Image (cartoon, rainbow, N blue to C red):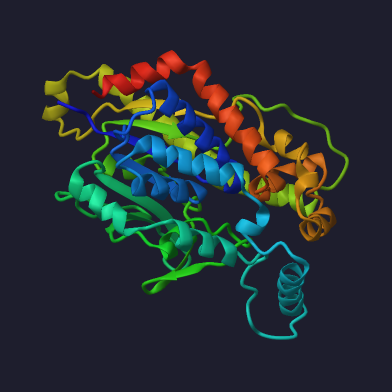
Amino acid sequence: MTRKTGLILTGGGARAAYQVGVLKAVSELLGHPRDNPFPILCGTSAGAINAAALAIHAGDFTEGVRHLVGVWEGFHCSDVYRSDWPGILRAGRRWLSALMLMNRANPISLLDNTPLRELVARTMDFEKVQANIDRGVLYAVAVTASGYTSGQSVTFYQGGSGLEDWERFQRVGASTTLSVDLLLASSALPFIFPAVKVHREFFGDGSMRQIAPISPALHLGAERVLVVGSGRQSQEPARIRSTLYPSLAQIAGHALNSIFLDSLAVDIERLQRINKTLQCVAPDKAAEFGLKLRPIDVFILQPSQPLERIASRHVQHFPRPVRFVLRGIGAMNRNGSNLASYLLFEAPFTRALIDLGHADTMARGEEMLAFLRRGA
């Protein structure tokens, strides 16, 4: 019997280009197949947009990957947010006005991501998602967003019959139909992009308060998962002496890393620990004690190089108005490059990440093929 394989694409703004390189390599390793190897697709933040694109092209996996490569290789900041002087100055005036209490309106966001909304609406035909589910080439697709009022991590999913909503501590799953608003909500970087109202609540980036990033795929029936991260976790980070107070960009980058990287590392560690525990427990004993746990075959791919260092080599490609703002908060130097790596939607940087994702996957090509074939 075929075991359902889930693909989990995490968040990270422009860092999500790395995922596209991984998918490009997977397509090549499998011989450019039409059949979709990932019937369950789960994405958060920018990963939600990539997952939605694959869901729309689930009838031809290779064509879906080609579409993503074409978009990400040709990216410019202006495709994602207003990066011209009028757009930057308008956002700056709004924030300055609020900070000086000249008006009582809350600042909406640092950047205006109207171009991203237009890009998603123009290039994604969401009606194809249900058609692919009905054809059996896709089982379920899910995107996760964070509710600003409830504080809950909500996974919005669209899938086949037999799926049920779930509710756990601070996280729920809700059946719905994929839409532009859901993708914009899931990818609304805190403070940077505006929150999006879905039904009765405003939602922001799904990586916030997402304490179990792998969980949605398991709730949707995945028995094995490929997890593609957007950052490298160090077991023993170096302690570096510093005499300078951290810049605003350095603090913001540190906060974004905490949002996008830490919960995934903890969830992976938890899953691996459960797998090891189940190896030591006989199935009849597990049933006797009512342990409703099952081992999950997991394959994890994360960048082999720090993406912020790659970003520091490409920050000059930011549009001039954006460079002006980022220089003022310290994001144009190496210490602030973490923040830059989330916002640098420019082709030289995204192509570098695609190449890295492709190379990292090919370096583990035999492992990847073995993992994918175990589900057949």
